[in-house]
Length: 323
Image (cartoon, rainbow, N blue to C red):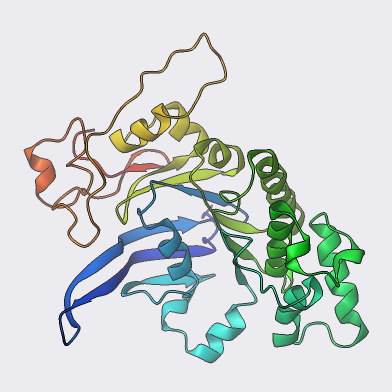
């Protein structure tokens, strides 16, 4: 029996940005934010993405949706190559692919009411004409834990957690099948984060959503994700099920990240792995394995060609020559 086709398939995706300098603004280099990334997301799956700041997580999420135009590579949505789609077709595809932005304070227009913010997508795609519009907006707000009385209020009247719920309602307005959640809880108080994550979990189950969940907090990623992908300096280091990754990481970078996660049991001791130096610049990443300049087990072979992302156990992939 063949496995079902993935909803999202990314092949060799690159997103490079020119660096200009001098009197005539000549291109003197490129920021390699995303560099040769390949992975898939199954239907109804939550794929978590973790990595340090500057690893290219947000750029990857936006490139999948073509909010950032990829430099090279292909992105397939339900079998359709969206990197080659013209603008008119891409506009129609926006109904199926939405994003929840990181900062709820910056992603909502302060001049619009909540009803206008959530209703914009309905108007653009002509989904709820006339009296149906307000009823649909109220339904969306109630679905994310807000109330009908909030429709005519402005964003400044809400807390950060409530604003993020408005952002989620806006993303759900067009009944998408795929959502990129770009660090949706990083700007929120710790006490509010679990509420928003639990809301996304409930919506995923209720609506059958496929979610690409980007985050810094490895504990939250473990909680919500079916599989986890680890990025460093624009490249994928490891992909595995959440359970396998947290129990037995195969890449030294993943081990270093997990060693910093607090353990609630005081009787369990975990040795902290401290990486030397800082992350190199994405303008001139190291040759070969981009992690080799900070890797505790790097050898001469790591400076050659980049290590391929290979399967080392069923469903567990890593990019490392040493293991």
